[in-house]
Length: 133
Image 1 (cartoon, rainbow, N blue to C red):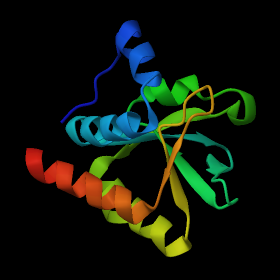
Image 2 (image 1 turned 60 degrees about the horizontal axis):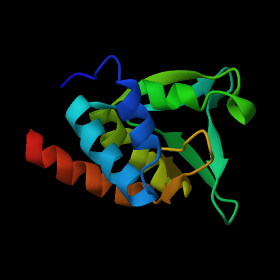
Image 3 (image 1 turned 30 degrees about the vertical axis):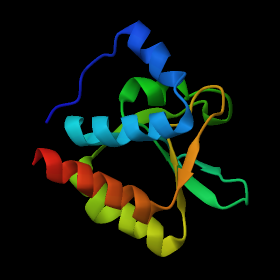
Image 4 (image 1 turned 180 degrees about the vertical axis):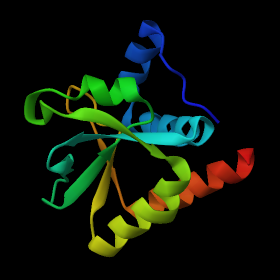
């Protein structure tokens, strides 16, 4: 499994316009296939947002380019960082679940985002990984 180095501009734009459920499904399929998810980091650590109830959420994307597109505004001064898929399902998501932290899946530059429980994302990723491993 290897992450694609670049995404064609038309594909990039089209995926950003997908409805939330489709962006979530894209994230599951692509991150399992490419073997990684991406977050944004700065000197303080991983960027977070908050769901509609104010609960913290760690932001994750299926590709570096989507994360880069969000590294402005409140997240200016951040840089994309790759997280290997098995580290995500074995360490990151269980840890977030223990902390009560949500996951902001595939935020867009226009502020669209899908908030999920880490246990749901873990289950969905494990299911997808079982299809390809």
